[in-house]
Amino acid sequence: MKRLSLLTVVLFTPLLLLAKTTTVYHTSDTHGFFFPRNGVGGFAALESVLKKGPKNYLLLDSGDFANGTVETGTSKGLKAVQIMNKMGYDATTLGNHEFDFKAANFPAIVAALDFPMLAANFFEEGTQKYPPHISPYTIITRNGVKFAIIGLGNRTPTNPANGYYFSKPLVALENALNEIEKQNPDVVIVLAHDSIADDKHGAHSYLADIAKQFGGRVNIVMGGHAHKIVQNRNLNGILFVESGCYVDFVSKVTVETDDKTGKFVAAKSEIIPLIVAKVGEDKAMKKYVESLREPNVDTTLGYTTEILSKRPVKDDQLDAPLNDWVADLMAQYAGTRIAIHNNGGTRVDMPQGPITKRDLIDVHPFENTVTVVTVDGQFLKNFVKKGFAPRSIFTYAGLQINYKKDKKGNIKDIEVFLDGKPIENKKKYVIATNTYIAGGGSEGGLFAQIPAEQKKQVGPKSIRDLMEDALKQGKVSAPQTGRIKQVD
Image 1 (cartoon, one colour):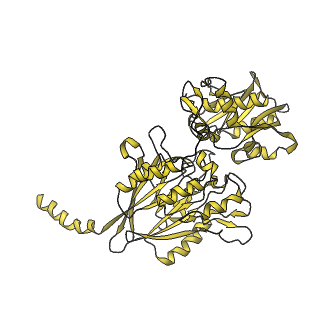
Image 2: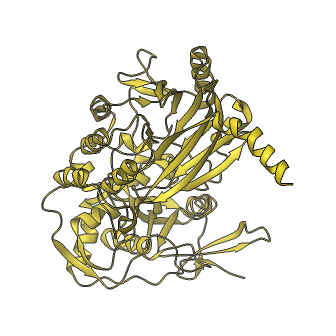
Image 3: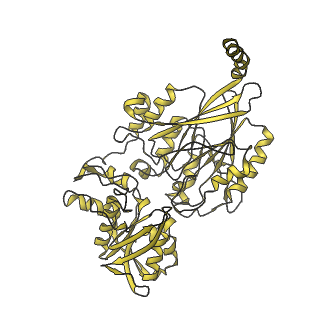
């Protein structure tokens, strides 16, 4: 047995030596979170990880870097570009929030990048060509390995992409592969701002179709958008990776290639939490990041008695304290009995204790005001039901929503009440919501069917203004939840 073991080692050792490993780091949905929060995250911590790890790595990002904090908001995304340039990213793709500052501001963001933005499915309407500074793919040789990286941009921008259009992503991927395969790459990576783990709309993700249609041609798919973590998910020989959000994590992908042929052999991933106490912070990067800090936003506006969570706090309820609070503020400001808040509009929890303007912008970075809309009961019930996709993507003031679950855990038998009475199909109801949803943005698509004369802006105050006013009136506590509740 000892001789056999030794012979086995001798025979297989040359095979092991034929393998080369190269590291690819991945982030997504950084949203301008330059600094650590509660001891976690930030680009100085990320830089510390990169410097301590293997050399000759690739650093890739799946988009949504342009907006989400006061630094990105006031600079219209350019401070995010500055920090990514400083970090030495190799490529990114087009996220939906790259259009937060309207299509007119988009070219300035892309032009300022020192590395390519990749979007094989994104074109100018006039020329039907790729916009300036945007490419379908890039080819980078790193550590002696020839990487082909193809980008697929998100097709639902937060603001209209006037002057641009999106093609079907899988068609765009096929076209890009046909071109790059002529250049004989060793490893093919798809960089997408979409998620294989997106359960927001209960819809099939096209990323899974990459595995069905392009097995053997694509090696790794790096996604985002859903703020999920996906590691070592292999479909038809393709590794799928997603890295969470807000620079709280980085994915480290180890790519193995044949040392003789250079061709892809295998890949595996691990998620690295950027806990400052464990990974440290690079001093030079921390100094640079601090130079980008926006002034005059860190004074205390008021206090909370507890954390206001943006996620449900009870298993049988789908509403959350922070979202309930925002919905109530809109209803009070508009003088309506019903308000609708899109949960995606609140990005992080409201912390406990002193609250600053920075905190409010982190919670709600958008400039939404409040709109009043008149709808009938049938519309309201349809909207509530469509909002279960499969989890509730909205929170409501004034309404009580009861639901049941079948044996598979699917939501069914949704009932909507106002003052304990069922909503009536033909009765008119006045509701408050934010301007984005009222205009039919994203998940508020049903509101696009409502005539403009049935919509009216309430006043000049933004939702952040309402939160600030509430904080100045006294300490804020989490409202009781249970507005969207499972019943037997």
